[in-house]
Image (cartoon, rainbow, N blue to C red; front, side):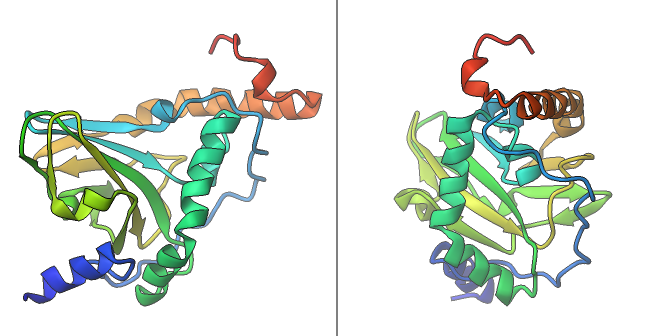
Length: 214
């Protein structure tokens, strides 16, 4: 078995994937994080999508600077995923020499029978530097099969060697497909941060503001 294949299998079992030297860690802005429970965004508002004839890929950054802008139920859902897999995430980060890893929820959707996908091909481009995951923590039993039927989906948490620049810009790449749509989300995220701050000051959660127009 090749070293690359062995490392990939370790990643699927909660170990380390294609390990790269740790980069200098990004510094979180000095301002406080938004308080949870006051956001109104849906998970789709944070999603980057790539699609070809075989599969669709959805990529959601699991960074509190943006997940705290989600509506309460959506926020609790993603936080629960990370908490349940925290031991595997920490193991990958420790083996990679990283203290504050970047996390993302990645989902592959099958669009045709026997659609093959390669989890390691999904890359993040930050300021002309290409990042592949340090490791992958599967959330679906069939994730390691790397094959999907029509309408089947599998998910995993991707662990990166540095935090994703969610307040700036980055690009997503998979098998010749690219998305730079994260930059276009900044205005939505900025508006929601202002709304969250206003709701928090008023003590009014987003649960009572379902009809608010963005």
